[in-house]
Length: 136
Image 1 (cartoon, rainbow, N blue to C red):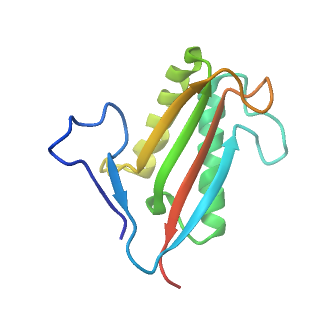
Image 2 (image 1 turned 180 degrees about the vertical axis):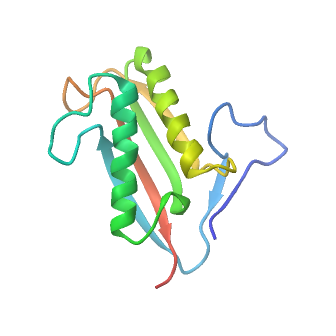
C-alpha cells in the first residue's frame, strides 16, 4: 500500500496534496507522460482550464485503468498551468476529481507550476504522474 503523510515538523500542505509519499518494496513504478485536455477523438475538451484539467485527469484515469490500476496507485502528480489566470479553474476541476478519487483526503504528492506556455497555444493545463503498481 502506498503511504502518504504530512510530518508534524512542517506546516500542513496549502492544497490537496501530501508532503510525502512512499512506495512499498516490490512495486513497479510507472511514469505517466503529461496529459492534456484532449478527448479520445483528439479534440480539445474546452478552452478553459477547468474543462482541460478535468479531461487531463480523466485521461490519467484511463491510462491507470489500462494497467489494471486506479487513482489510489498514484504516488505523485505534477501540473503545469499556462498562466496564473488558469490556476483557479485547474484547482476547481482537481478538487471535483479528487473528491471522487480520494474521498478520505489521502492525496498523492503533487506540485503545480505556472509556465508561460505549453506545447500548443490552446492548451492551458498539462498533468504528468507517477504510479506504483503492486506485484502481479
